[in-house]
Image (cartoon, rainbow, N blue to C red; front, top):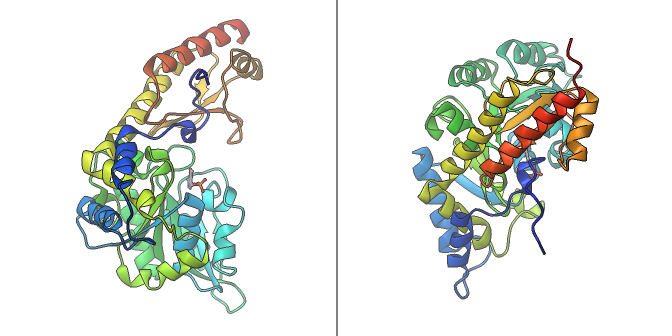
Length: 350
Ligand SMILES: *Cc1c(COP(=O)(O)O)cnc(C)c1O
């Protein structure tokens, strides 16, 4: 099949990066113990412990919906609640899985319009009710970077974590693009997580260059009790686990996890810089990771579609472009040129 021109509608359009692919190929050497009792899986877990410089518990699941839902379920009883942003993936894109796997824990959703949670929002949600008739607040979940590509600073995370400690809440991080946040802040993974007060992290592998797979990392290991049973019951225990775990060895040990994210972020920064100079077209959100949301008149978006570009407009009506490890710089330049041309054709000059 002839390859069609590259699209940036989703970072899940990308293939598997060479480092993940070759680690998977190395693991494909004869037979091997099943269900995660193999040496690839223990080496991958060790690679995470090394990366985070702490003795954490690591589990490998197939996708982010499962990682988030099962992590939250392990932090909650069914009568608890989880505080999240209005745009949080757990609220908008997981088909109720967090509520389902926790047997009914309620999501307490912050007011729409902001994609980052603040301590003020969390306090308001956590303390609005304390009577027996309302689900008890138990967990805060933040997405790093957010669904609109904003990155929580270390100080913002620390402030949220301090409030969590004050209110006896656990802190979960949806890191479907965790690597992009590390690349953006230029900080060590430990600084952004357990050192800042995060209890559990879902670290995305799929959007970082793997075929499939996310890691659930418990920095507070007492919270991981029986998590293996939870994964199995949810259909998330891979029998040939080595193929879910080995690619992580390739990503983490070669540094590809960070290089891949840096590349995606750089492509987004390039598009953002170019869009800033085009009249009639503007950025919907600051560009801090690997996504760019563009606000433009509908005829401009239609022109881009007519020129063959695919993109989603489900967030804020803007066109979303996402850049993965494989984004081709010339293709980014073509997109820039087409946005420029579309604006020239369809933006009325005042
Ligand atoms: C992609 C993504 C996930 C994971 O989604 P799956 O399709 O279930 O793998 C989780 N959170 C965020 C913020 C995402 O963008």
